[in-house]
Length: 164
Image (cartoon, rainbow, N blue to C red; front, top):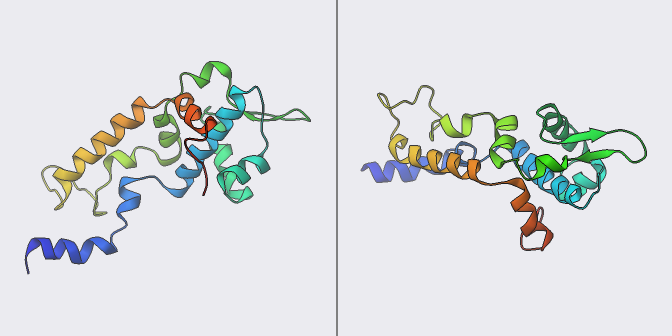
């Protein structure tokens, strides 16, 4: 059996998405932050129910994600009748996507093995190590270059969506 056939047989059973992309928690965190940023740009604070509805996430799960985002100072919250979640104006133009990913998923998206092996390093690589390193490096570069405020512009103009 050739190497290509082995890869073909085994790749479908590998959870490549979690190695390359984000956890479900992080996906919801990014979506919530974009929605909160859009509301904040318009001078509004928003509640957990509206956030959960807009990102199509269960309320309790959304609440835990929002707690993490507040803890890492990505979003802020205030209590009371005019309270809710928001992003301070000065943070809107400075916050990058990498901050959300780091707060929720850590640096695993840049370091984990594509095949899920422990200790996959240059000296003892998995079969995908060298190719996958380029993917991880590109992903990190992309995350460091995207501002949350820029993503809200496309969302506001209905060019991008937070749920289907």
